[in-house]
Every structure is written in C-alpha cells, then in structure tokens.
Image 1 (cartoon, helix red, strand yellow):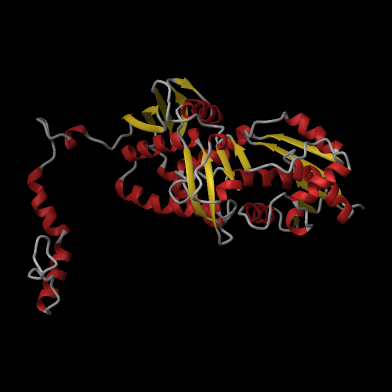
Image 2 (spheres, rainbow, N blue to C red):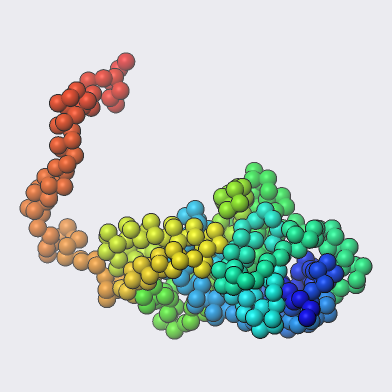
Length: 414
C-alpha cells in the first residue's frame, strides 16, 4: 500500500509546490487539507481545485469559522490571552484547530504522516507537531521547508518548471498569517527593528491618525461570552467580525512588538487585531466589576500561564485543561453590558452595568447615604499592619532600622 501524507494546505506557492515535492522525495501520495478560520482571500473551492491540479490525490476543505470562534477565540477572550501583555495569540490559537482537522483527515484517508509548511526557526513548527502528536501519538510529522530543503527559490523554480497553477514571484516582502481573530505580519524590512511600519503593512485597520466620527458600542456578555452588540444578538463569530469592522475603521488594535519566540530568538512582529483587542478590553472591565478581588488577582497569574502554554503550542496539554477549569469558574458572574467608545486607535470603556455587579454604590459613595462604617477602619489598619510593625520594631532593636538622619533623604544636603 502506498504511504499517504496529509498536508496543511493554504493555496499559496510553498504548499502548492510541497505537494509534488513531497511525492517525488518520499514516494507518498499527498492529501491536501485547507481549513477556513476566517482568513479571507480566495474561495475555498478554488483552493481545493488548485491542490488537485498540483497533484494531490485528495483535497479536504473545512469551513471551521464558527468552530474557531466558539472553541478557540472565546477561551482566549475569557482568559484575556495577551502574550507579553500585548499579543492576542492570533496565530497561536489557529494552529490547534488546523491540527485537529489534519489529524481527522489523516484518520479518514489512512495517512501515516502529517506535513506542514513551517520553517525551522518559528513557533508554528512546534505548535503543529506537538499538537499532532498530542492528538495522535502514532502519526509522523514532516516539514518540507525544514526537512526536505524546500527553499523559496527552489519552490519558484519547481512551480515554473512544472507549470503549476500558482503565481510565482521573488518579491514578497512580508510573511503574513491571518484569521478572524487578527493578522500577523513579519520579515522584510520589518526585521530591522528601527524601521517603522509603512502603510502597506496594514489591512485590517485604517489609519488612526485621521479617524471618522467616534463610534459608541454596547457589548453584552453572558458568562464571559459576547452575545449582543447594541442590543442585537450575535454569535461569537459575528461579534468578532462586527468588532473587526467597527474597531478596525478607527485604527484600534495595531501592535508593534519584539517578542520572545519559543525557539529562543527575539522576533519583531506587527499585529492587527481590532475586534480581539476591543473585546478583551471590554471583557477585562466587566471582570473588574463582577469578579471577587482575590479571585481576580489569582486569575491574572492563571491567565499568564495559560497564555504562555498556548503561545508555546501546548493547547492540548493537561495543565492548560486544568487552568481552564479555574477560568471557566471565574466567568460564572461575568455577565452584563460594557459601553465603549472607539476612536482614533483607542477602545475606551465609558460605562458598565451588571446584575451580578460587586460594585455597591452606597459603599463607594462619599456623599450622603454612605453605608461604609469608617469607624472600623482604625482597627482594620492596626491588624493589617501588625506584622510589618513587629518586623520594624525588631529591626530597630538590632540596629537595622531605616536611617532617617542620612543624606539620602529628599531635600537633604550632602
């Protein structure tokens, strides 16, 4: 029986060439798998036919947009997933859903190997291969660019020699990955981290320097999930798409960052994630209103670890699953409305309301009707500061107290 390889297929030059490249060098038949996670561009049927025209024995196409929004973007939203506090995991959360469909196709078509188009320098090779072996430990992994020396120059020459139905050009200044959660741009002149991004880098966002009239939106959440915009019910996918449109028109969600890759190098990345960044900002503020203080403090630690695991390709890991049990529990009361103004690159919260709010006006007010018993504050401070007071007294006793006579005091003269 001829060996079969399932290839993660995008429809571009590299993966189109990889079909024949893999077949020639391994003798295997290639099944191309394309997964729609809201990346836009060409019609999936066109991509499927191109894979067949390039030599694939089968071509599998999946419309996974709703699945991606519900099962991958929403967990990222509830976790406020921001790597290095800024990057909303645009590419990282798309890899596990693609992996799931690759493994499903491998089982369906009786393939023994799964291939992807990643290089040996990036995070995605880890995300694909760890994800594949986490779901199917028996499957082998293949990366033609890394393992079979498929360089860009060789890909162009191969496509021209075999007259493949794909455009070939040596001038491609950027490497771009995009889906409904956002867009990632790297390489080219951006690799010089002193160079500022030019206008042609951006696609999901308009220039925030010259914004249209401010756009006010009310986002309704139910247990951490957006369910309505301005009172109109939406699915998770519709919420992301509509916020991409509205926040993108105001230039919200542009990110320029030097980040720490899993493989040990620092990389300059440009991201556009208007919907993701606006929704995360709204979700964080609703949590400020509805999540208890100690729970919220600990959740920030959990969020960071969850985000690192996802960035590092450990979507299917036991620890991530355990952390999500905690995150899910914190979302029980994260329901209500957030009013937000989108304008000039900013998404600014201007109002909050929730039936499950922990904000008590009568406790917070300084006006008449204040129900906070201020007379209890003195005793609270005494007990709260007791350990610090005892430690300070011991320092004084042993001559280690703070020097209050030295020249290091503000305003003192040497």
